[in-house]
Length: 393
Image 1: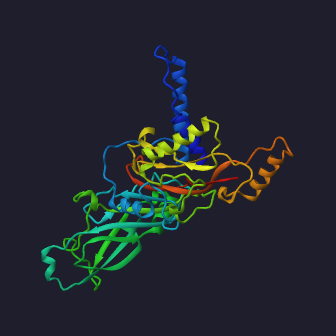
Image 2: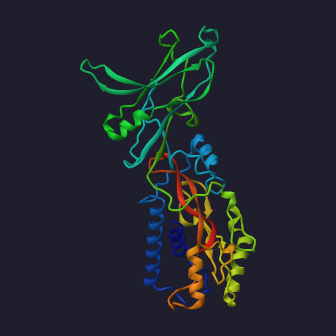
Image 3: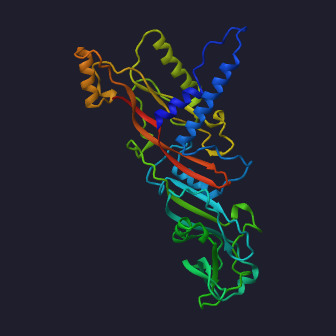
């Protein structure tokens, strides 16, 4: 996948050439070809990120704090995965309640979830408001909060419901409460028409219904967006890594004695640019540089995606460049196959055998936090997007 990204970026951001003569004008056909190439490159890059078209831009909407916190937990400042084991599956989707009912009932539109995605865990996030002053004198210290899946109506026109989750909550508490409702979401994905919503019932320990004016949860109609009811799905879309993920991105290294830029937002800084220019200058003078890792910054704003991507604003994919001359030292991290190929090439036993290639030998995943077409915030993990180190293979 990384090699595909590099190829696409080469089309989107070609190397700068010397400025053309002032009387040179690009022909209409050349301009049209350039636009077609860019359009094809963007389309191919979208496929890498599992999309057919870029999501619509709906303006400046604030992502849920939960999704921002989750992103910062699983990814560093540049989106590189801290630990592949931190996230369940490779996709997390958040949905706001669409019903906005004054009753404690909720409904979520799951049309953006692909049928091929495996639902691992589904959570209902509700914000319990501060108790009103009148509650101070209540004799109850705990209440039973139960979440039900609303089912079809029975013959007597009373709506059936199915218990999903139930637990005790302190009456005087406030803040986020999370309930697992995986069973309901899986049934909705199997039959879209069965999604009739959820109902929350609050009872005293004695079993009687409690006054909703005393035990209140924030609703999408009457409270700030930051406290709106939210459904969070942890899913797996079936994509698998083609290379072994290292559990420690800080271990990324370069097969070179030259300094390297760390995986940070500074990859486009002058230090990285000077390193790249130094390598290019040495190659122009006929000096063969050994296999090494060099910066390759992917800027989402330049590509035109900054309107729907929340984080990161870009990332350093890195690329591998350089020669693999005989004899291959251990600092080149050669495979046994590459070592044999290098020997055969050096002895000229077979004329068509070339020297081994400088390629990534360790790859890392990145995380993207973005808005989808329905303004839901999605966190998705993409494998094999960053070259962690390079070797001769």
